Image (cartoon, rainbow over all chains, first blue to last red; front, side, top):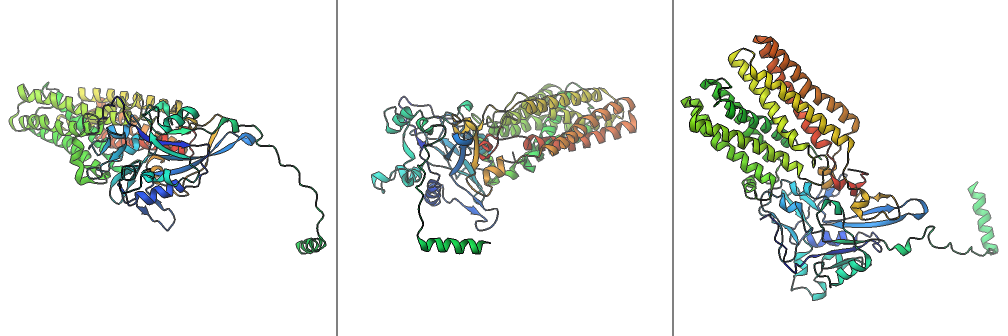
Amino acid sequence: MTSLPEPRPDQKRLGLVIDLDICVGCHACATACKEWNTSGHMAPLPDFNAYGEGSWGVWFNRIHSFEEGEGEGARTVHFPKSCLHCEEPACVTVCPTGASYKRAEDGIVLVNEAICIGCKLCSWACPYGAREFDADAGVMKKCTLCIDRIYNENLPEAERQPACVMVCPVNARHFGDLGDPDSAVSQLVASRRGADLLPELGYKPVNKYLPPRPERMRPGGPPPPPPAAAETPAPGERLLRWVDRLLSR
Amino acid sequence: MHPGLSIIFFTTASGAGFALLALLGVGAPLALVPTSSWFALTALAVAVLLAAGGLFSSTFHLGRPERAWRAFSQWRSSWLSREGVLAVLTFVPAAIFGIGWVFFGARGGVIGLCGFFTAALAAATVFSTGMLYATLKPIHQWHNRWTVPNYLMLALMSGWLILDFLVRFWERRAGATAFWTLLAVLAAWQLKEAYWRFIDTTSAPSTVASATALGRRGRVRLLEAPHTEENYLLQEMGFRVARRHARRLRRIARSAAFAVPAVLTLLALLAGGAVGMAAAAIAVISAGLGLVVERWLFFAEARHTVTLYYGAEAV
């Protein structure tokens, strides 16, 4: 049923918190996501024309890089984006078949591939670009929050996290219950003023983004390094420099 | 938004078909259209072929067309599902109305009532099509108050144009249908111009800054896209028509869908006879082509919010 489940009193809202202050844009989360999910719950994640010009494929996680500000005060912000598992996911309610659904128990938004007709309306309804069409299977696919990892009893407990979170080398991604105000992720969002993407559209995304830390926002950046002391080059080096100049003419 | 040909054909053809069905459903019981069985058969066949052909065509854009029947299940939440259910439901009273009118010459009583039901359900179907687009918040050019009136009026206009031609073919005289057709064309033209003015002068509240929750340091711009090549999102949602082409295509749509049919309908109203019939026929063809261009633009000029993540400055 594509009607949304009634939120419970202590509704669990599993999601991600992404720290834009420390993401280095290495794309490891996108790669790990693709690697896990191409054999996971929504498998496969096909690629088309993979080795030629115009290659494209299904990815659940993509890393955009933005520049915030201009000139000396500007900063590069790497911006990973995947499904935000919204509390008001229009992608679910527009689905004509019931293939799209939001789980009542943890708020994860999923697609039942067996009944998806591939009308693509859900991808039109998502402002975040979280849904990607699998042209091979003719159905829509999306991030599952690694539902096949987080509840997977065959994995050691420490690894029951989404693949993107597990792999992040700088700990810029955090997974947890954002419906519980005392959870580590909720505390993190509160202390760092985590923000919603496109709040004006009213989708109430569960995933939160931590903005770059304001204390780093010094116009002019860090103080310039002290000027290097003038060195006196060794005689051999002077000869080489002379040869270099001679050959450069 | 990527303009899919099957969806363009579906919305234009089904719109015209359901509108014609509605006009017949109201017109026949009230004797506003020719009442002969042959007229009934021809007009209803045209209406049903357009409506059903459009619906059939819409399944071509599905990834799994063989599962299309599942789309009837979620009418509680989905306008696409409602559209499908209403479209099929329309054919139930339409069948009773059609059989009664064509084979038994009956237009009153239960048959007439079924005509009115047909009209109401057909109108609701086109309304659902409009709502499907109007409720998509990420697309400013669709999520506005002009989308639904445009869908309804453009459908009604094409229904009137076809009806006018058929009536003229049957009765070979200028009648009230030409007058109403002219009014419908002018009303639809006004609504389309209002829609174009709206999308030209407004843009979505969303910006790159709101999309990224950045901006405290100043302007936000895309530095590097996630991938060097296009992806599904850009193919489907990133389609944008060049502004120059949009202007030219709007001129074509304006002339073919509204100006030419308006002038020809007026001519038909004044002239009558063979000239009137030819004018009414050309008006239908011109409007058909014009509406296809108009519908293509409806998609091509729609800018999806997701493009903010791919370098768009505004949507």
